[in-house]
Image 1 (cartoon, rainbow, N blue to C red):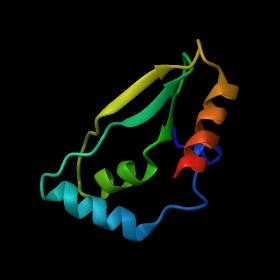
Image 2: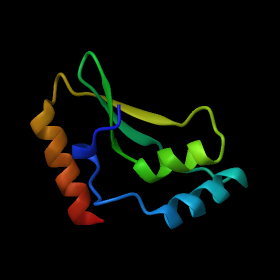
Image 3: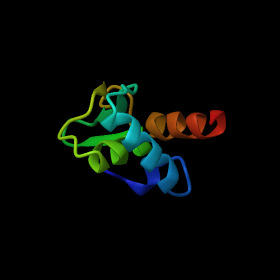
Image 4: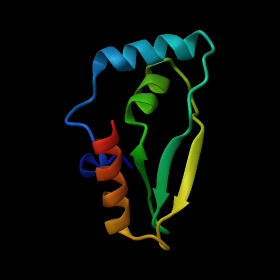
Length: 88
């Protein structure tokens, strides 16, 4: 699930998506996207540009790291997002 509140950037940078998509099409590998699972839904929390780039490159799959958020909780997910936004 793509949740706007979990996207740490104001908007998707189309030039970054295009650059990543070209690199993916050329065989470059990227780190996995980070997904939190709350027991019902999967939430993309890090890697929005990589996700959109894989789609643009016509890829049917993407490498994912899944964190069980039932043990973490939404508050911790949002803290992680804020930490990531501050570091980038």
